[in-house]
Amino acid sequence: MYKRQDIEGWGDYFGPCVQDKMPVIGLPPNPGGQTPDQLACSIAAYLANQVILEGMQAAVATVSDDLTLISMAVSISNIIPEFVLVHLFVDAVSVIYTAVSEGTLSDYEAALTSAPLWAEVTCAIYAAIVGVGYVDPTNFATIVFNLSAMTYTPTDVVTAIHGYVNAIGATGLAQLSLRAGLEAGADCSTCGAGWCTKLDFASGDQGSSILSPYGGVYTSGTGWVSTLRGGFAEIGIQVPLSTTVTVAHIMVELSTTAAGGGAVREGFFVLGGVEGATFDIDGSDTGGAFVTSGYSPAPQTVDEFYFVLRCADPTGVIILRSFEIGGDSTPYGTENCTYDVVG
Image (cartoon, rainbow, N blue to C red; front, side, top):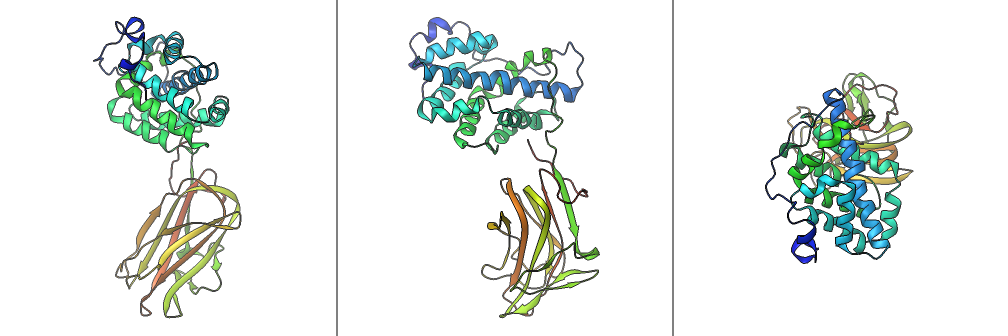
């Protein structure tokens, strides 16, 4: 990766302008009187579409036209004059330049016009800062984490965005957001909007049924209770979905009177009729007390859930009392739990 000291002309163009120690500046000017949440949205949208998108556009143009990194730095400083006041400016520029020049150029060219990507970037930043209302050192780590967790593909674009923002740093990103209060019209109404539905088997079977050839019996008022098969106490059920959905959250509530053994307690869900991710639910004796076990996969499109709960002790009893799922839109029509997603 290129650094400041490697670039001919850096000192002449930018050396006198950059201050190595700039204070983290708090709430940007807000002449329009935006509400705190709206101002946070304006900051997120400005950073996504002006700082990050513009940086990627400059990198793509530089690589496409076979120009130098110093030319790109000049270009970005013309687009975002405040950038030259940010410590490590050229180090951040070199991150995005290196990613584009050493990666697949067509990936970045397509990303420039991807509305879903830039909405996801906006939401990733907004979700991290909305509690405080602006960028500061306490939420910067969450910003870069949220950016790294974005679901956009190809993933090299996500990696480049994450590296670029991380190189800018908390102080730099705070300073670059100072103009955001002058912006208006950003919409973050869909950010963090997720669905969550808990299916309570104690109050009904919720349309679930035995998954052949596994065991289990439904008991009203209790839930699914294990039966014996091949020396294992087990429950195997399938839970239909009314539509194909994207899922990013699963939580199972169960009890058992025996420790698991082998590949014993696991669940899996299917996507498009093909078995999807398998996840461990619980492998410990709960003494009959109910515990919850959660799983947060990368968002995946699914059309059905299968759960298989097993323990090697034939005297053990497993009870599955409930599970909840969450993601992008509910297949059940109602929500009775809380799960927030970014994007």
